[in-house]
Length: 382
Image 1 (spheres, helix red, strand yellow):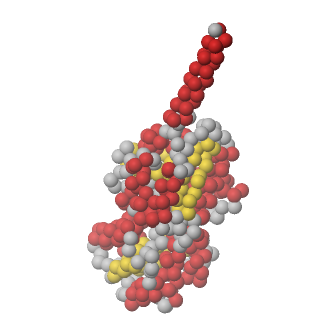
Image 2 (spheres, rainbow, N blue to C red; image 1 turned 180 degrees about the vertical axis):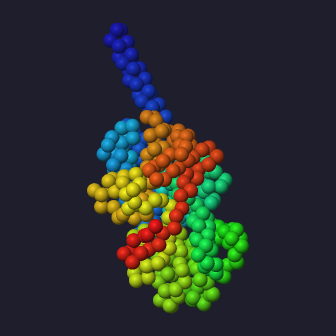
Image 3 (cartoon, helix red, strand yellow; image 1 turned 60 degrees about the vertical axis):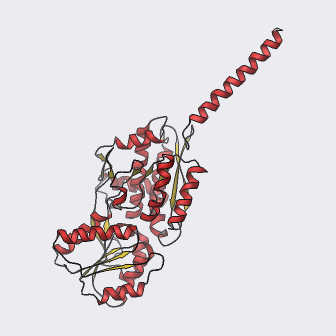
């Protein structure tokens, strides 16, 4: 009798222990284990933006490796599962769905492209999963505030305004805009029209092209035939370089400015002999600026990983720093909602030359914008 009673108590004990651990597992947040935190990323590793994307990813990877080498975040290593969306919005959506449902990532990190990021917004709301540092400056991710989206880079419209102001200041008031005909390009167009009105200027010409099948020759011909003295490009990847090369090959000396999504060493290299004098807006401080704490840290952390010293790599580096700061503030038992609240607690957070602020009503992060020019040595000059 006693033997049977002991057996029954033993079985009940096993069931109780099993139920306890099952409950723990059920209540654990996706992507979080005792030793790791898994982030998900969908981005164009191949395709027309592959060059700057690889530089940006390398900057982020170097910082995550540095953090992991020094104990991780509350003892957990940060891992990133990356899926290539080939700069295709439909594939970005599919990838994000797989990362959330199959890979069970804790959060999404640094998507790339305006329509691509827009495509995954419904998934964020459905699964209550945050996206940190999307590499797009479209206003739609800032206003109205999306509870699940935390921007790091400034708005494209602020970059365009900076360019219009610069051109107007130096007397180049006959300005042409070329933009891709998608949500990214239309966002830039809106910023351009607003800035031109502010400075009481009228556009010489506004030219758009199809994102999937850009007619480079036709767009370049329209620019060359215009009476424009300055050109703003709200364009992406290899298309931007092809347009600039076609315009210069046609003999035009029009002053050209491209927005920050083109800021990479690979972009400079793709321009070849036409690189010198091209202006590019920047949304992070210079990676080679050793007079800043951020520049010193970037060089120290990335040197052993052979990361290209570029603005694109610095953007990735900065984004990773913000991601890690959010995880640290989220505590030893992080939840997705806890991460959101942790990020919203960041006020005037100085990364060493770049300051970010968030709140429940503002997920903009940084408003840093400056203009640079490519010099004869194939480097960005401030």
